[in-house]
Amino acid sequence: MSSQATEASHIDDAVYEDLVQWDRIARSQEPAGDRALSDEVAGLLFYEARLLDARSYRKWLELFTEDLVYWVPGSRACTDPRSESAIVFDDRRHLLDRIGLIETGFLTTQSPSSQTCRAISNVEAQTLPDGSIAVHSVCIIWEYRRGKTNRFVGRQTHQLVRDGHGLRIRRRLLRLIDCDEPQGNITFIL
Amino acid sequence: MTSKTVVLRRAAPKGGGKYDGLVRPDGRIHRRLFTDPQIFEEEMSKIFGATWVFLAHEGELPKPNDFKTTTLGRRPVIVTRGSNGDLHALLNRCTHRGSLVCIEHQGNAKQFQCPFHHWTFGNNGELLGLPYPKGQGPNFDRKANGLGKLPRLESYRGYIFGSLNPEVEPLVEWLGPARAILDWSIDKEKIGSGGVTVVKGTHHTVNGNWKLQYENVSDGYHAAFLHRSMVEMTKQRHGPGRGLEHWRAGDRSPMYDQYLGRGHKFMDQRPSNPSPWQSARPVPGREAFSTALIGRLGEAGAADQLELSARAYINLTLYPNLFIMGHGQYAVYEPVAVDCTNIKFYTVIPDSLPEEVKRLRVRFVEDFNTMGLPDDNEALERIQESLTTIPEMEWLNYERGLATEKVGEDGVITGSAMEETSQRRTYSHWQTLMNREVRLQVA
Image (cartoon, rainbow over all chains, first blue to last red; front, top):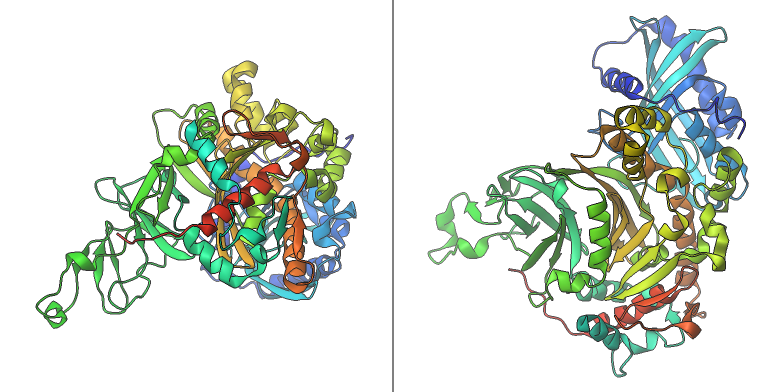
């Protein structure tokens, strides 16, 4: 309870407007081929993937800024998170709830937990006018749990910012190719 | 009121029916209801065909020529609003050689053209044209070759239902006592002169029979246990009195559950949640949008509006496929196979709702559905798995509340939210419907 004040949601219309812009960047068809920058930031994305595969969620969260948004839209057509519900739409507080749920040890959908292995590829980065970095990549996740193997495939666009700790993730927008379809158990973090 | 009594009387097993042995008066339900593909096929006609089935909400097709594709059981259906505003429910199958004529989820179209030979149909189903029509012969009847239509289609305050049974009772009769609860929920939103739009909620697919989904939202017994992770996490992180904590009162809870007849059920959580807004878990944007609304309308003015942002704590289920949570939230159960069901949540957004409340409403849908609903789906998949694989254990136990079950004067059965009475009664209704011979007809 003591952490409630510091965890207050930062989501307001300004953040939503910013996410509409971010969706536009994610859909950009312009070249984004800063190779040196792409190589530099790919390391962070690979590290993020490794932490998620290890379900090391607290450590993963350290990669993000305080004002993070983790958004997995529920349709191809959605260009604004205000317009419909998403597969996931989390600020830091909601993400900590999601992680907290797993950490109780009573979450039936993650006992046993999902074993994942993800490939991040086609990394293309570019510096934006505000100094932040947009990184486009392909995310392919194979997930195994209780006798079944599932796949989740999508394109993602990270916004990275440099602060005192180096590169941090501020936005992660992941659009699954089949996001319009009904989804199964997504109680691990994609 | 007599119609309710009739339904309950019909629900008592009479003997001699094909399905009498599968639903027992002692509250035992046979596993085959959930595992037998033949039974599933028959349900697609006798239940998802012969009764009223929810198809769409008018807010999904607000403008002339809007359409949405959906299903009636497994049958692909296009619900359209014609250019004059009339609603139509068309079977999505070319009358020539049978191809689906529309594969979009939704859109706006005056015509549907079959991709195979370009037969073209109006959005009222009428056959408008075909290439080289002479080849069909001199007796070709264009009128008789329109798209198949459901013979019955009715909307109740925006909720559109259809049936392939020309003799199905009028929709308001079928709603029965459920009507007043639905009215309460809609009236509470004070929908103004503007229209409503319906936006996508979360959509899920579960490897379990559709009836497991339908019964589950009236099962108060599981809430504190199956959702223990959510209850404990919420208490630890956000303090007491939020989320599902009210279920911990168990037998002492003032919440109640009702069987309304015709398979409809009502689980009322309002007695334990006088303020849905106060007891809701915090969602993204809670602070900014509530502060903005209070700034605009004042504390008192904003309070009523904020209550509308979270679900209304009414679990109203209309047999066989609609689950209404109130405050615009509803879900549709879509049977895919005997062991697979899609659950599609939608949110009705009245134009007159404050923008701040609209913002919060879409986030509240995600909150439970991505953190609590997966527990339910996991449990139902485990049920499906064992029922399918252990034929030697035939019976499921739905006896909670049987000893104290009492039919009220209005035909409604009211019991504790911890009982299984409404679920059990739904299976008696299932038996009645399945024992009945029906004649379905395409208009």
